[in-house]
Image (cartoon, rainbow, N blue to C red; front, side):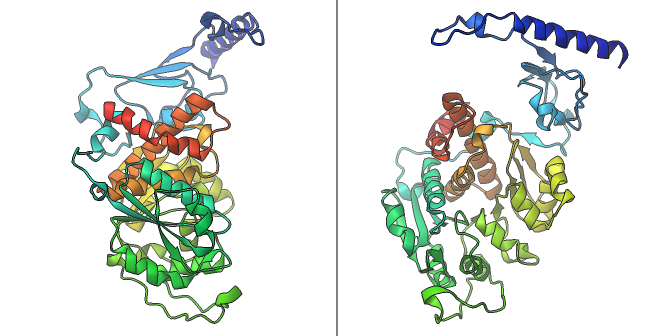
Length: 423
């Protein structure tokens, strides 16, 4: 208010006037770099004037910056909207602050050096068994691509061997697109996995170092029942459809301790959301990968409460990880990863290029690939999500903010790994 408000209005008007003076770009002709650059460049010390550094709220007069230079650590508001959209590029300058002064309760922002230090080694005398065997239970006649993207992402993240456990009806079409994957062909009903598949999955799962459940399974009753019965959830008998109507319905669910370290994504989460206290049925330290809509279903939010989830996403992730006893990757701009022990890591990526179908399948595949290589669940979650975000940034730089496909992201996972190892 007062003189400060007048000053911000004056700056905004002057910036607008100067930028209007720029020579127009001529179609088909390359312009000099100086002509294409923003004039003037707006730089903020710590951030834009009018920003609340705790909440991310902004005054209506807050200017859009090109660069913010903050000191020692990012502030909470830098990673919360709407302020995050006005800060421009964020540079954190080291001014020799003693790390002991940082609050242990504060979230940690992941960076390339942190991820590079966590990644598993790649010894010269390695073989495919060195880098883990991963099983991915995924796909349906509706979403065969989800299985492909998840499996390819696991390989791109460094897995030694990936097995796709998928409905028989889509095996041929998926196998034609992936030569490197091995397959466990599961019984299906009209292209959807059925509860009969539990026997095969449970029998083979003990041979794997990690498992991903959920991408593309669909919300059909048969697939939902498969998920429920895999985790020992007892439900009222349901009438079956198609050619399996008279099949045997008695199944012995596997012991939770017999399942390998687990990632649950997409339709796996949606199936669990239908069960009261579903988290008690999962192996400890399971990695859950909800987007905000899936999180709302898992915690039974509706109406106005769903809209408030995004504003409190850090608190929600931390609270639910503690309550459930599992690791939560709450996806979205500035994805947050929370552990049951209270650790909270925020990723520095807000990228519209990742808002595309299949992006979540790539993230889940990268996470399970690292889990299978021996990383502890929380570290696998942080590393997989960070590499996915960095690969998305590389795709945006190469292609632009629109038109990026999930396959463009997974192809850049090895490049992302190289970047963080170099850091």
